[in-house]
Length: 210
Image (tube, rainbow, N blue to C red; front, side):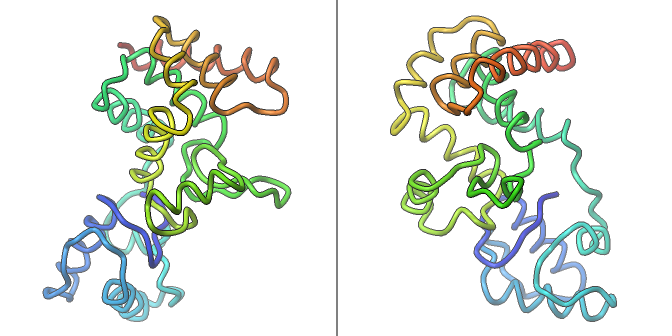
């Protein structure tokens, strides 16, 4: 499971709230919104279980709640399933996810190495972080895995629709990965990233299949 804190929303928050209800907080609402009541319950739970009391649900708190951590492979499968539900083909979904995996290792809370501004699954920076805030009505920092996947789809069909249109024309996972690299992620070393991400897409397709 991902790290959750106040302001997070989504299915992981609902699971957290459900777990807290069964651990002594039966009146806590299961609404998928990590607000003050959920934070207070988390802090109380952490105190009772002799954990660091910070209101942040990381690996130790999840483990105390009886939830094993997600693996990177599980997140890859979940993300592919998400994009397929949005209407992308299996190959196109793998192309998207290969790029997200290359950018962040499928960690929605990861900060760019070296103190850079990139954050989250797609390592969004600057104006695109502001676009997320306008779309989600809260900061990208602390946002959920599901929200960030939703924002990728939003960008590909709205603000980054040129990339989305090109992606819709692809038929293979490696071609899809190249389009997402060149037109959506646009890394500094585009040529090198294309080679690596085409290969990664083929590896994911071989493991998971379409």
